[in-house]
Length: 264
Image (cartoon, rainbow, N blue to C red; front, side, top):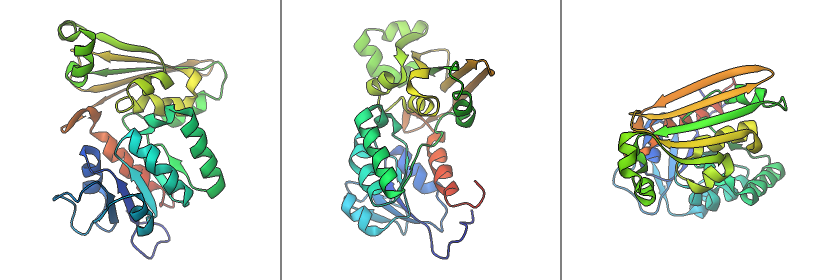
């Protein structure tokens, strides 16, 4: 992809080099300069990429944009510093924003510096439609996350529902998006992404372990005076982490590159 108005390589900082981070690094164009913030320099770091030991090293490296692909904790620790330096952040761990104090802090920083926190679509889509429909006060949004029981093995065992989940669907949670993200900060990013588009009070969430599905499935129903929309996304799980959809890394890269395109 051609970066509009650029004479130098785009410098992308990447926070995290786990399953998603590795996929992101592989998907970025070869013309991109990559700096990876990771605890130790992995042997499979892409050729030409620079290993960065901490957030200070990342900022000193001078990225044009930062992709967070680590965890809610890493997001909370590093995103404010990047945004505070006027560097846009494209975040995978948007579940961290269930913390209203962190969200308010980030919004204040962005207002002060002109930086932007980019929330990519991730495992779902239709966010522009959801945001438009949500402008009407009577619009409601329901989101159901369905994943194979293997994706929730630890949670089902803790609930004593492992055997039940092998026979039929088991509901792990039903309630609002903020609490859902707080309970499952690594696995309910899609629900919070929808809530950020529609408003936290508009979205009801169900989390289901379902033996009838082989893939991570996201169901969204938007209804109100403007009409009714039903969206379903059936994603392949990441081979290294079945709780994460493989398309997540693609969404992060697409959102990052789009920031520098003339056509928005």
